[in-house]
Length: 234
Image 1 (cartoon, rainbow, N blue to C red):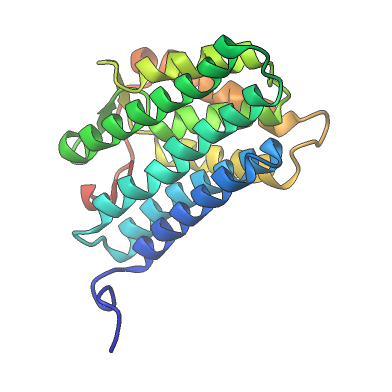
Image 2: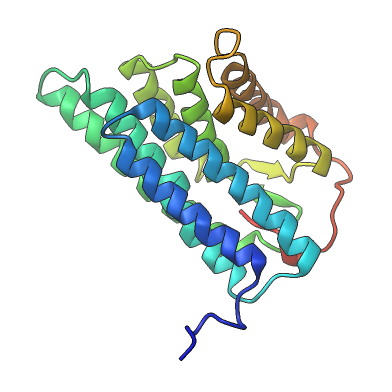
């Protein structure tokens, strides 16, 4: 007897499910090696972009948007929160420090889940999204850790900021295809050679992410290269 998903899910959905597995691996590895876990988060982001490309190429399924958001909970909510726990708890001292080291990541997961639910309900049929994408928040944290930005207070402050930004009313336009491809290439290089030239690729990824975070809502609006809305993923 074949599993229920046979004939109902497509190739894009298989990549989406793989994204969830990468998120689990990142969360599990974070308690042992936070840098390797950060690489898995970036790899999950590559899968998250790839499933959208495949959905546009081969067609999506009704389950696709739901699978995508569910997978993103693992990869871009729980996994980055565990990165923060790994960074902070490794150097924690005192009850307040320990409480913040768990409390802020827990709030990050909560806000990411809320953001993903709102996205699936309201944003999938538009060329914009409201609030900072969970993928952007997660990859900024992961790339920052790979770039050597791992001072606990700074990591907690950035994470706390993302807790609000993910559910803020700020509108972000979808990336143009060429820019999404560029980001994907930098993601791959940051995973494969994170220490090349003093961490050049993680630093570049943080720079690109912050540029879109700060400048995107005001300067990035324009005609987008879209090939149908059915392939849009978070």
